[in-house]
Image 1 (cartoon, one colour):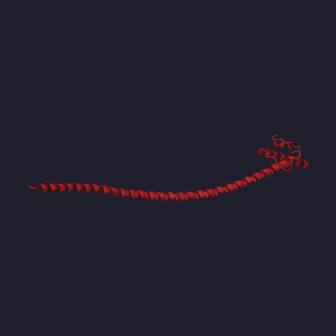
Image 2: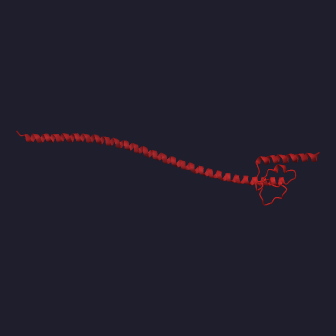
Image 3: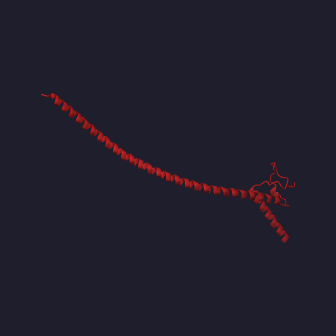
Length: 161
């Protein structure tokens, strides 16, 4: 009996069976890789779409920031202009109050005005024309204007009578 050919053929059959099993295992791994590849392609597609949406949102935000900056700079310029106008008006009002203070009978409401040293001004002392008047409390200005108006009405009634 020849055992050698049978042994060789059985070895070949075992090797062939191992090869077939290895190929089946390799095939299942390849299927998993292809499934992972398609899922990775889906994930990459979603990432690209998300990036495009983010870029559009950033562009919109940049445009909004530009508009807000332009609007804010315009409002700041307006505010600066109004501040200058208010300052000019306040200085003019202080000058008018100073001139009103020089009129006889209008001084009682100016007694609270302070000089440059923090002390009450000497109202009988002549004032330097280059010296700017010190602004007073707005409520005292209103009270002074009312007092002046009342005195003017009283004088007008006295003259008419």
